[in-house]
Image 1 (tube, one colour):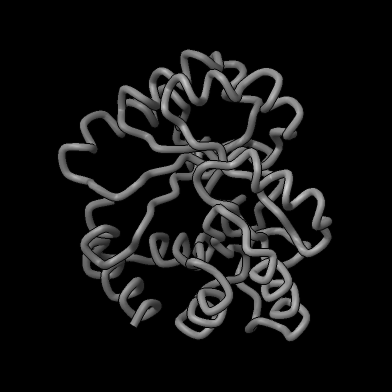
Image 2 (image 1 turned 180 degrees about the vertical axis):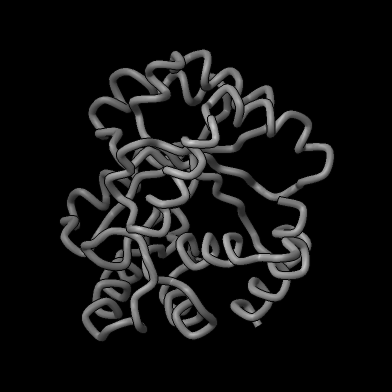
Length: 224
């Protein structure tokens, strides 16, 4: 996390390993499996994050799925996030109605922003509803698919990015899924407030011999 901040990133997303990560492609599925086989759990993640705020100033969000969090206890989870200094959550399988009815008050109580995802198939009505009930950023899924680097950004995707940009939403928009290099990053960022890189970064970590050096080189090659 310190290396990511030093390299010039603006926000850190930490994946919470889960056995059935429905939104994720092979690379992140594989990293989930390795982590779980190594005994990873929410309890262990929280232990690893203890004291990170003494060294990391960037906003930090956790991305995961409802099942492990419900098992941990939603209020206990939110309370622990606040204690550690986590800023927000991305929970792809949390329906908006459930968030509004059961968890919104809890998230606000513990200072956590909730991030909803939209895709090319999301209607304007739904996007505006998400914008209304968001207070962090909106996660724009670049295509109707799972995570993982694709080759380039199509004209169809650019049309979708422009359509959402022209809606003049109140929340910042970050584009993810298929962003992997300087070209895709800058193209996506030209239509939004920034872009999110997951699978390509996981590959860098997996192949790294020196995390600090390799993280810096990769991030700076993307944002240059």
